[in-house]
Image 1: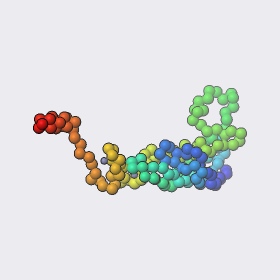
Image 2 (image 1 turned 30 degrees about the horizontal axis):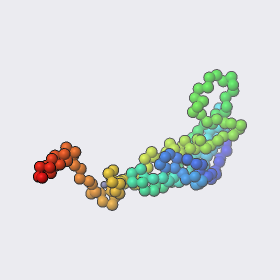
Image 3 (image 1 turned 90 degrees about the horizontal axis):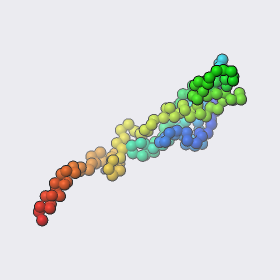
Image 4 (image 1 turned 120 degrees about the vertical axis):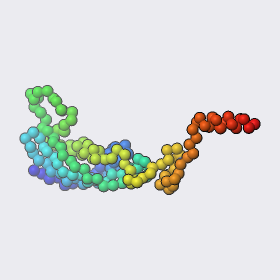
Length: 160
Ligand SMILES: [Zn+2]
Ligand SMILES: [Zn+2]
């Protein structure tokens, strides 16, 4: 068994569309590599800081994330090993080496919110004018039903 404690720079696009680790920022890896019968079991954690935008008000959002990593990297199967099922979903040991990056990326993305928010009470922006509702929760627009506006036009016409 081997323990890997290392700080690696975050690769590009390490996250989803709204939030992720900034390229080059630190990822603190603390993983164990264990030889098992059919491969190498990687387990541990990755600590990183992710940043992005609040999906409601677009304010910057930043928080620390600890991603649990647990993946089995299988030894490349012998050619006589039958049909290659599940081959697409598995990580492989290649040339006695493992590429942690894709496994790490999957583990981190899995734990990122799809719609990050700056706070649980974020009110977001007005859907009509983009006004920051936090500054005035009472903010609203008079909504005129189109049928009424047609009527008021008629009344206006009457007056002339
Ligand atoms: Zn917000
Ligand atoms: Zn508005």
